[in-house]
Image 1 (cartoon, rainbow, N blue to C red):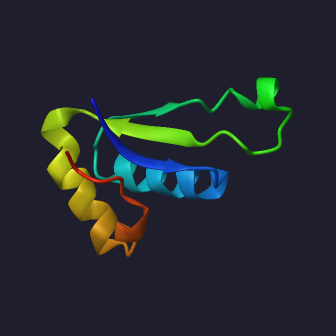
Image 2: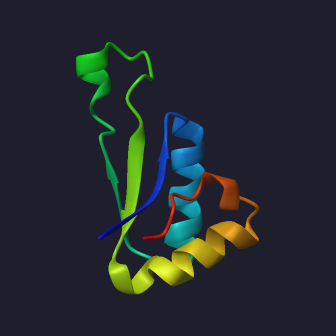
Length: 75
C-alpha cells in the first residue's frame, strides 16, 4: 500500500474517496476514528492509501482533478 494523501480536511478525504470510488480504485482511509482520542479537534491527519499497482492511476486521477498539491511525495 502507498500513502496518497495526508490531510486534516475531512471534506477533502470524502471528495478524494468519491473520486477513487468513481474510478474503481480501491483505497483505505486510516486514522479516521482517531477523533475519539483527539477530542474531535481535527489535529491528527487522515491518510488515504492505495495498492501499489493503483498508485500511478490514482495520482493521475487526483492531478486531473486539480488536487496534485495534496499528493504525498511518491517514493
